[in-house]
Length: 248
Ligand code: ADP
Image 1 (cartoon, rainbow, N blue to C red):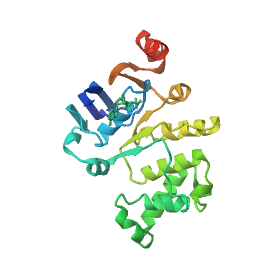
Image 2 (cartoon, rainbow, N blue to C red):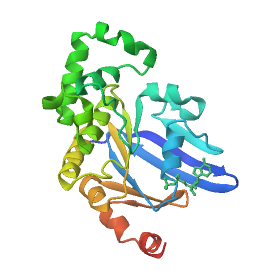
Image 3 (cartoon, rainbow, N blue to C red):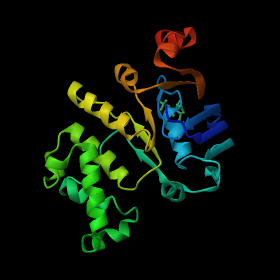
């Protein structure tokens, strides 16, 4: 078990929307290289928590740190992205008319103004990086095919690959297996587990079977704070968690 200390801290973070506390004195620590799953009923604050980490939503109070040096509350969204925090939303958004390879090529540049010049600038190093990401995501054989022909699962892996082009330190992944076949889910589990170690990965997911298959540590959010945290077996047998899921 390789642990390198925390990469992300949220301390006593709160945010209200029209007087409603969506996040309420939330404390969360993610270790470098860890794969963490966040679960919780609808409205628990999972999306808002991700929005706070990426700088999309500013909390009313509390602190959010990336490593020991970066106070994320002093940074805007692009600055936070440049630190190496990548986010994957639930729906895949790949460029359908481009090839898998070209999608990864474009993802090299966070600055979209660079895109028209990218093909000309494609260096050997970039090609190596694309090949590496194709291999990681299992898309090598499809590299020259149009993204439009990919299955739903393959599009999700391509989008994860596009994030990987930026060499993120922390990946935030929202419901990666929604709509996937059983086989695609197994492949996604392998992919995410393979990323952990080199990257820290935070996955918000509703599918409990999937969460059980990948997570060492599960955080249960409820009413904007942590209700329980630990192994899947530990949280699943916690009476507070059972009440929220069965009584809700
Ligand atoms: P989850 O992702 O766990 O389903 P959310 O973070 O989306 O939960 O939402 C938490 C609560 O905050 C919900 O009650 C939601 O309606 C509310 N909320 C989230 N964002 C906003 C917003 N921009 N304006 C008003 N209410 C919001």
